[in-house]
Image 1 (tube, one colour):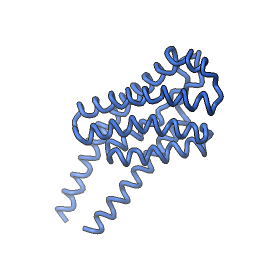
Image 2 (cartoon, rainbow, N blue to C red):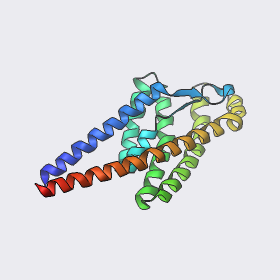
Image 3 (cartoon, rainbow, N blue to C red):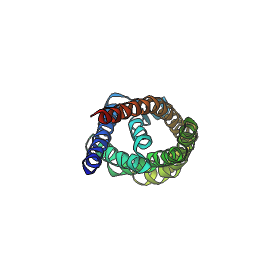
Image 4 (cartoon, one colour):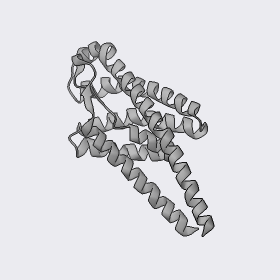
Length: 194
């Protein structure tokens, strides 16, 4: 029993590390602006594996995956340092936590859809004050410039990014969960035969 628990913990840690690695690879491969008027807003899929991890292992594990991924992105892979790290972790953390909690309570496609929708809206709304605080005070962008970009670029960008990443995360998670469920059942069946 003790050996199985130890093996399960190691497997979970390895799978979480793989999700972090996939996130970082996606960050380097897929990154482009959606709005030419705000080219600094870059779409990426970096948080899709994080959400898959939240669905697989629970919301707190999803937050841990996000914490490590955001730290590595911000400080080791040419990200925006501590400001980018904090904005990323807070906004995406709300998405991961809310969607993960919804799915933990309602383990169904509807739970996934509702959690991703509510999480996306919350993350988008959270980016409004985060942009006013961090973009103005730490990046030195004038308040008027942030005001002028908020409705035509910042809010739509975050809604699009969160919506697309939510669709991709759900589309990836469902077959992965089915595969892992079948694999786990096969392992149990094989152990029963021994």
